[in-house]
Image (cartoon, rainbow, N blue to C red; front, side, top):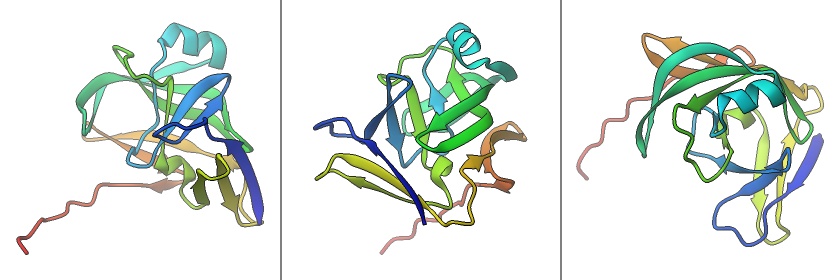
Length: 161
């Protein structure tokens, strides 16, 4: 079993780690990573390229318009994402520069240990630390794809109890 840990920010109400000397929120309810950084900075620091302009994503905060960029490389601990695709809002206003979605950690065991203030990721020995994360536009809606696996919505019908 491969394993690595990153420190959690001390006494935060949400799971926050530090990446590239900036805070990164791990949002287990998010499906695509959102980087609240101006595109010019992404282009300079991460060699980012615009790939899908003028798209929207929806969430509990409503609709957010922005674009999808591909970063040459992005690392989360020992996980290496090459040509890593992220959503960048037109108006960056999140408190955190990096919002990491749960789909980035699909196929791993991960835990938030608030007692010891660490975020731990485990992979089987046969799993690669290199990951391929893309964002696909299917009929105007954005869906994550990790290592060739396309994730899609499940429409849940709520019934009265």
